[in-house]
Image (cartoon, rainbow, N blue to C red; front, side, top):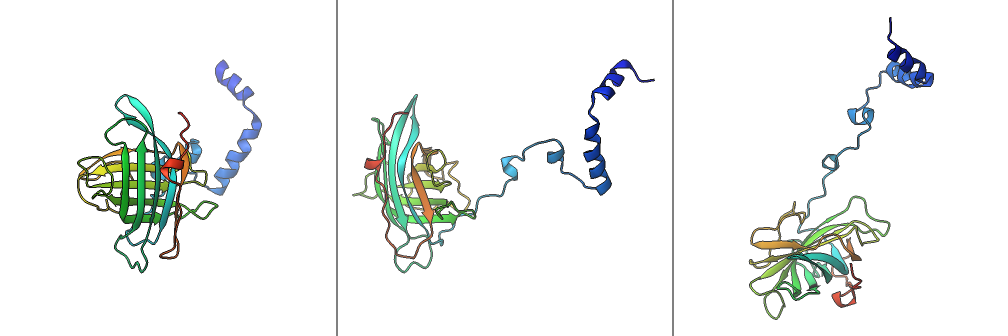
Amino acid sequence: MRNALTQRITRSRPRGWIAPVVAVMALGVALPASVVLGRVEPLSAQPAAAAMSPDTVAIVTGGGTVIVTEGTMNVVASFGLNARRPDGFTGGGIASGRVNYDEHANVASRHVNAPVALMQAAMSGSPTPNGTGGSAAMSADCTPPAECPSGFNSVIVYVEDNADSGATFDVFKIFFCTFGPFLPGPTFNGSTAPASCIGPEGNTLRTGNIQVRQTITGSSASVPTAARAPLRLP
């Protein structure tokens, strides 16, 4: 004989719920555990980002601001960058362009103005409505007359073009390196500093935009400079 609690549950349960379950069982459909339990698959189960290649023909432009932590302070840093393949490019990572970076505080790593020497890139398999998207890493040469913090021979800039709107979606990170210009490898994603480097500084954009796109070799590009980046307070 059923107890009173069982009788109350049976009476209160809507009869309509039985039909979908019977239909699924009759069809012999095996549902994934995540569907049965209503879970969202973790990010680790999503497809991995494409590996970057030094042979990818790409052009990278961008400018804006990021928040950088210096000691106990959060300061605004502005940046402007462009990088592309030279005329006649056939592979090997060679690139030209410029990296400008300024922290708006009196700190040691506050200013970079250096030419791009190398680049690796990966194009997105799901481009934005503007036809752009992907990631890139650029290495800029700190040999004078370039301007970099004392003691560093190159900087590596990692960027992601994730959305046309840029701010809060696109990514800018900069690393300061004691080695001369080099590329960090195809699986580099900007999360940790390569050998000989410190950083990163920066992360998702506070304001501005990054564009990663493919283009005809040798085409020109324009880029917002750090001086034009808006400096709205956090």
